[in-house]
Amino acid sequence: MKVLSIISLIFVLLTSCKQKSTEDQVSDWIVNHAIPLKTVEAGNGFEDLAPIGKIVRDARIVSLGELTHGNREVFQLKHRLIEYLVTEEGFNLFALECPFGEAFDVNQYILEGIGTPEEALAGIYFSTWDTKEFTELLKWMRAYNADSTHTTKVKFHGFDIQDPERAARVMLEYIKKVDIELYQSVKTELSILEIQFSEPIYLGRRPYIPEEYDEASLLAIKHVMNAFRLNKESYISKTTQKEWVRALHHARQAELWIEACFNDGENYDEIRDKGQAENIKWILDQEGESSKAIVWAHNCHVSNASPKDDINMHGYYLRKMYRDHLKIFGLFFNQGGFKAIDANMPSKGMFNFSLGQAPPSTLENTLASAQHSIAVVNMHELPKKGPVREWFYTERHTRHSGGGYDEKKPENYFWSYTPAEAYDVLVYLDTTSPVISVNDDAYEYIWMLNKKLNTPTNLDFEGDSNGEEPSGWMVWSKFQRLGVELLVTDLNPYQGKHSAMIHRPEGVTFGEITPSLTQRVDAAPYRGKKIRITVAVRSEVKDPGFSFFRLVIEPDVLQSAHVGSPPLFDSLDKFRINSANWETIQIEAEVPKIANTISFGMYLRDSGTVWIDDVEIDIVE
Figure 1: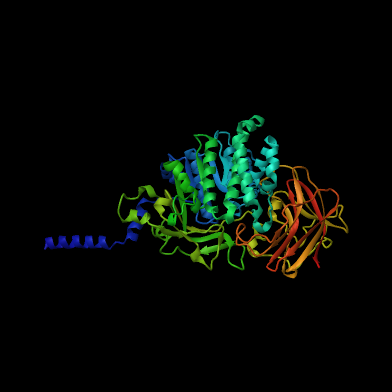
Figure 2 (figure 1 turned 135 degrees about the vertical axis):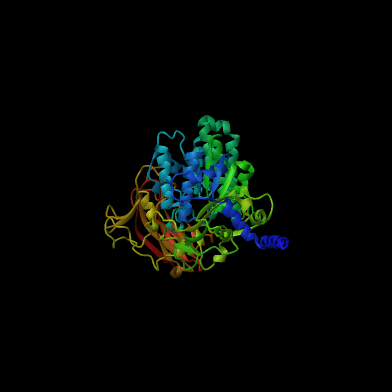
């Protein structure tokens, strides 16, 4: 009987083992190997983060990803991880998914306390980082650098190739100084790159300008890059080695932008991520062998692998360069809220979305089954063989959205990764909430809202009072955050009592934002006709700044700031405002039958004042 009992017990044990599913084994492994974290909030000590130190000890780069660009707790946890990596592990560089050139303005706040974090964030264009959570991170970096006991300072860098304005400006200013013939030969094709057409509907991002990445532009930038290398000694003799290196890499950003957008952007994603990796390497090379960088970007950029042999992520290229000295952290959440642009039509604009628990087939659902509220899972601790290892080396669905989301099409917002190939570390949060914007007014004109007037309005500003914002015109809060005034004034109008003005005082600037005062109207009454717009303008702007009046006719509502159909007509910066005395500008254009909107207004590059009065829009018979 005892023998039979023992045999029965063994049978039960063996049977129960066989019945345990792979999912259960994976969950058990996560429970036993996950590193639980006590909080997402910075300033709560580092004791629970100490095991992470063992993971990153030999790393030159630690990359921190995210599933969306709008989870508050994800941003807060990344802030906490950054504090730990800087304070305890000696990381001294912070690199963000934002424009390479403009990020140097954020660095002046981090290192020297120039300006405010809110101004600094306005200057890098991205709405994704324009949050209270990111503001707190910048304040911490500034406080850390202001502490005299911290002899090694944290530096802020951008590594994205998008938005080439600062890069083009630095490049053109340099070649004008060292090679005037080269400057004269390329300025017609390349000078458009340095002008920011900062319309609120694009959130300050660059609009669709096909002329800047055509065949002629590509030839011009290749000519510039060749000249930099062929004339290196000559250029350095007129400046310095440091200036040449800086200008060359800014020129490289312009080259990457043109190459990425060329031929309808067919290779945009690949060139963008290769460029991101190239920039991160350049930053580390410039900062020296002892430098160590923290990279902040979306999971799809930092990851090392993606489905169907898609290698368009900078983590793949960094892995080839830095191998085990790169540690990639993918961040995931199970349920809760996040902020994004509503991609459904009609759009709700910037909106707080809420999601239930992750679907059963997802990586997040399995991580949730281990019942940790916040945890870190090291992929290098996986078993050498067996079902658990195989599970993590198989493609798994994860949530995936960037700056936009359509709650009517949730199936579109998943992406597959092989977890153990894509990431070194999985960071899991059970519940999140939406980020808090620095200023919600920054999104009131966003393109997805398709706001437009039925007819032009308030064209002579006589219905407004002195010192008021001009009614009917787009007055963007981000311009005002940078100290720009957009007001009605009774000072020397063209005729009547009032005109309107843009005034930007001299001083420290952030980014290349060009303040504008524009109006956006329905094209329907003008379709199939020719229009003439006449406007009185004057300006007081010191060189190298300038102002201009612009007319744009667009065919449809863009799907994003960079995706859609090219404008049907765009005068760009061709109609400059050059006189301190009132002058009139006239622009004529055909309005095709497919036109959706007509936009017009004035723009101010750099500091100074520009005025506008008595706008007329006539149909030309």
